[in-house]
Structure formats: C-alpha cells, structure tokens
Image (cartoon, rainbow, N blue to C red):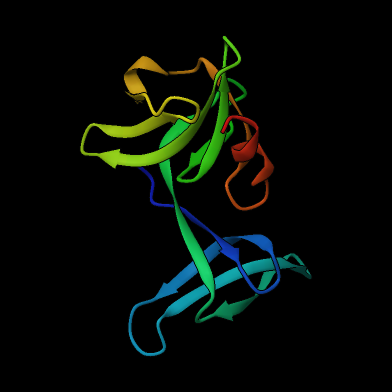
Length: 127
C-alpha cells in the first residue's frame, strides 16, 4: 500500500513545507512543519493560499521521493513534470512535446531537478 504523505507550497511565504496533519472540518487547512524545538517539530497552520502536493509512491534514481508537481530529467536529458496520474500510478508529462508516459516506463531512470513552484524557470527552458 502506498504511503500517504504530503507537502505544501505556501504562496504567501514562497516556501515548501512538510505537512504534519490536515484539517477537513472548519477551518479547513494544513499544519506544516517549520522547524524543530527541543527535538519536537514545530509549525504553523495554513488555512488558505497554499498548494498541496501528494507523494506519488515513486522515487528517483537517488531514491528521493517524488511529489505531484516535481520536475525531473531523464537519462537522455529530456525534462518531464510529475503528475499524480490515475490508478496505474504516477504519470510523467514531457514538457517540450506533451508526451505522457506511466511510471513503468520511467522507473529509476530519472532525477528530480526541482518543482513547479520553487523552480518555475525550468518550465520556461523547454517551452
């Protein structure tokens, strides 16, 4: 079974955070880890102005966890965006021509080079 993990892009502070918990009742939002204090995580609650990204269950060649919105480079130097996909797993969208492949075509043959929020310039390089 795939591990459920999330990270969030805080649009106000322009920072990526690990999600500690999520609230589905009022107020809807996420509690994010902003650091550590005396060995325990400390954080803040975001109730709006954020983008939630889910871990897709796959890892890159360096065993770094992939999240929806990550940007990866394959062994041939092509740039792809990670998408959650469907029940078959994550999909990868080639940014220059829009080709779509599944995780089975892409397993452990790529490296994460950024994401669409922290590195938007990577999207412009292939356009």
